[in-house]
Image (cartoon, rainbow, N blue to C red; front, top):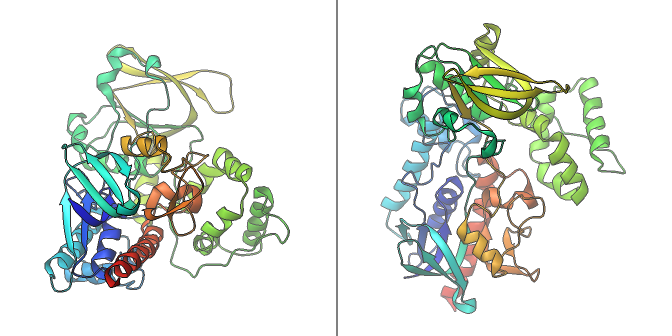
Length: 456
């Protein structure tokens, strides 16, 4: 099987690239989308049908097309949803919007390239140089593509302790992947639950538990006990100011704090920083980036990745009622005592020990950092020198055009990466408003190569 383009992956990045290629490539071109996820394009985040799982970005900024900002809002209104651009739509609706957008392009055959879904996982590949890349699939097939776009995302992060620190009897009460929502049916109304992690995934699972009739105590344990802030009323972004002579993180942060003291609303400042984050990240040295990941990341996450006001009100009401208890500390072991899992942890800022017993433990430590360890394909590409791992574990090395850099420091003009795999270069490249721009640029570069080949 030969194709002009192979898109490797099944999540939002893959569908965004696919949609753009369908609009840009000639009818004679061919596209293969390689992935084994039946919910193509929706991934974990947008496959949920739970109505309380809301987008964390207003609907007006969630169009898959950067140059058609109202596309998602218009789709919602055609579905009879009373949503304005400033409202937070459900994630399930967003998944349906992506599906419908792709389906409409596929139905419109006139002038469209051929797109085929290959339900398989790419397990290895060989660089065929002038011919492209030959992929080995787990269904024993092979596929040759002149151009490749790697859209491999990240998986659920592991538990923050070693398996050797977990009592064998407790294993049956540990939910390692909370996105398999079938686990909710096993929780009894008055069971006590411990959620490991205090970010966006935790918020989702707390609301899901309550919606399913759970009324027991929910303990939330994370290293710092920080929970996401809420979006405020819609206001214009504030342009951030930087120190004139340095990009040291402490100096940059001091300048931002001065702006807030001088009257800037911090949410507006964070919104103003959004379009400048990638440029600022690229100005930081390797050591400055490492310091950010080591010390500032938790605070960045709760200020930058905020939740809708309605979701925040629900969650805060549970904290005020004592139904949700947030602990800051370091988990050390999971034991088993009197038919309950016992969480042993060290409270933050102390050398002491503390514990509480629960019926269930849910891993909500979020998504792992984009790396290559989880992917047999990426591991083989690294062994063969086709890619390099980012030195801070943020995906793979790419250039400014998202072309993959090989072990000889050369950019491959036929292999691109989109989304979380490019975080080492771009940092803010996990949310829809950022990925859609990157997907459009990469699709444009691929289309230019294919169209150039067609004209020869």
